Length: 464
Image 1 (cartoon, rainbow, N blue to C red):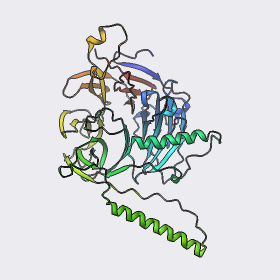
Image 2 (cartoon, one colour):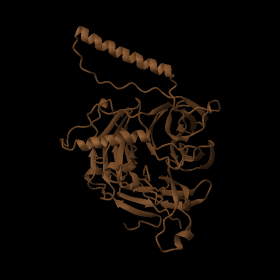
Image 3 (tube, rainbow, N blue to C red):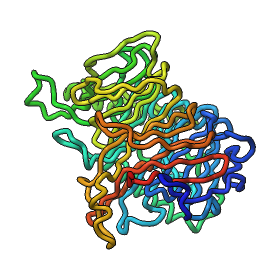
Image 4 (cartoon, rainbow, N blue to C red):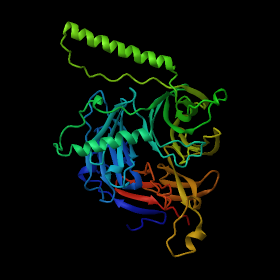
C-alpha cells in the first residue's frame, strides 16, 4: 500500500458501500462510524475487522486483505430474552499451526447479559447466559508481560454496570476448540441450518468468576488489571486475588480486591450437592410409582451465579466529574481514564496513585502504543533487523475528535512526540492480541479506521 502520510501507512481500503458493511449502515450517511451503536473491533494481526450494529442486531466480519470483500454477515437469532448486541471482541485460539480461521473467534455480548461466540465463517460456537444486565464491554488480554508477581493466564473480562466477570483463557480454549471440531463434523449438514436457535443447554458451560463492584456506585467501564498480594491476614492462603479498576458517575475511579473464592464452605457445597441429588432421586421414584406423564420442559434462563468476595480498596469522588472510559497498558500497571470534563488521568494501578493529567480532551479515546525511539539503531544498517522489546518505548495515543488530531505522548512523564491530523468519522482501533513469536517481537500498534472512506491505516512505530 502507498503511504498515506509521514506517520500513517495505509493497510487496506475497505469498501464502505460493499454489501457486507452496508448491513451495518456503512456508506449510507457521513459519519456513520461516530454512531455509538456501531461497534467495530479489529482482529489479531489486523487480518479481519468485525463491525456490529446494535440497532440492526447484525454482525459483519470482513477480511482486511480483501478490501472488505468476501465477508460474512451474521444475524444472531436472538429473541427478546437475549436482547441486542452491545459489545464485540476477538478471542485468539491456540491451534496446531496457529494459522487459519480456526485461530480466532468473535465474542458478542448483548444488553441482557448473553455471551455468544462465532467463527470467521459465521458458525455459532457457544452461547451462555452470564448475568441479567447489559454487557458494556468485552476485553481479551494476554498476560505474557504482566508485571505482577504471577501474571496468570490469558483472560476475557465481561463488564456490566457494577459487575465484572472473568473467563480464564485455558477454559475458553478447551470449550471453543471442541466447538470448532463439532462445527467441522457438521459440515455435511445443511449449511443454512439455524444454529443460533440452539438452547444454552446444548453447550457445555464455560466456568467463570463474577464479582459485584458497585460499592462506590455503578460503573461505566472496568478492567481487571492483574493479580495482587492477598490481605495481611491471609498470607498463607492459596487463593488468587485480582485488582480491578472501575470508572463511573458516582466515583471517577475506584479500586477493588477480587477473591476467587465464592465464600462457600466445603460442608455447604457438599450439602447443596447432596440435597440436589436426593431431591432428584425422590422425583424419579415418584414418577415411577405414580407413572406420571413427564411435562414438556419449559425453557428458562439459568439462575445467575453467586458473586465471589469483593473488598473495596479506594475511590476518588469529584462531583460533577464522571469517569467514562478506561484503557490498560499491556502490563496492566498503567491505566488511562477519560472523564466528562475532558480530562485524561494516568493511573498507576500498582500504587493506586495518579501520575499524570491532561486537560481539554472532551470525547477523547486512548490506546497505548509502542514506538521505536532508537533512531541510531534504525539507520545504522541497511539490512533487515529484528527489534526487541527494549528498543521500543511505551506511549499513549490520544484521539481528540473535536480537535481532529491524534497525539502521541511518551510514558510516563515524557513529552508529546507526535501530532497527527485525522478526518472526522474516524476511530482508533487495536487488535485484541499481538501473537508474538519466539523469533520476533510484535510491538503494540494503533490503527486508524476512517469509516467514510473505508481507509484503514497503521500508526508508524518509527518516530522522526
